[in-house]
Length: 123
Image (cartoon, rainbow, N blue to C red; front, side, top):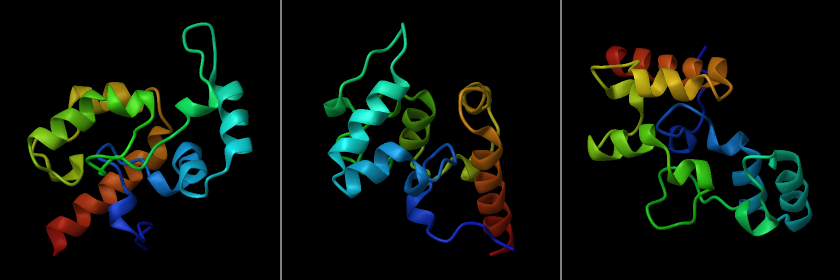
């Protein structure tokens, strides 16, 4: 059974933007949630304010992105190659993607990309 219901919400790396708390809080304009996320995600290396917790989605070319998404090497690579997701790439999974997945919920992202890749080969 295909887990992906809305391909447009799957980021280049396979994360489902529609389940990302930053994306959801932005879409629903939940300022109190943004404050909680900023506190929760802040650490000694990164300190976030509620205004930093904004993202219009990975594929949105002009909308504001969360700090990690702006700097994402996987996003940059896929955009340069004009791919919807990394699942389309002949180098999948590359070292950039593997490295990023080590910092993300890699099981979910990898499942999403594998499903997309399987669907692309079947269709």
